Length: 205
Image (cartoon, rainbow, N blue to C red; front, top):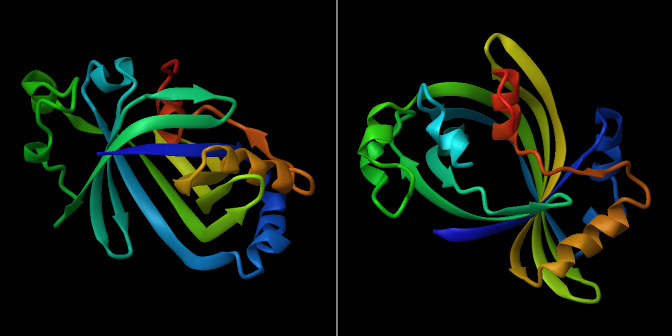
């Protein structure tokens, strides 16, 4: 289990090239991590017990295989979120219920027995690892995501920048965002990809 701390920023598609060419990512402080397609299937019960408890459970297919992830709701404000996260590598796309035990509340046996695929996301992620040395130090993964959320025969676009703290001070996330927003149209967002999936299904978040 880890504590995930990240800042989510929405941007128009025509601003993506401004991210890729920003001087912040062309110097020695940034290391380009490449791009990959990420396919995600989110699970819930027919009664949406996970949504009710603000928990997200997904299986992700990426270039190296599969990974199962569970995230709690945590705290969210002005795009900044802090939440617990568990990740497990998988051999296939099948959800592994044996990995989910009593510490992963509210996933009791009733809920586990009724989990079903709920909605999907399909997006391309482009990443940089940034060593920020402003007023505070922070190691930050910068991820540019473009794609869509798909549910109930409908879809919503994904176009967002995620700044995830890998080490150092949390304040570094805001310092980097403050620099980027000087030349890029960025809007903080507290709505996760999972929450957008539920919205497509006609459910409030």
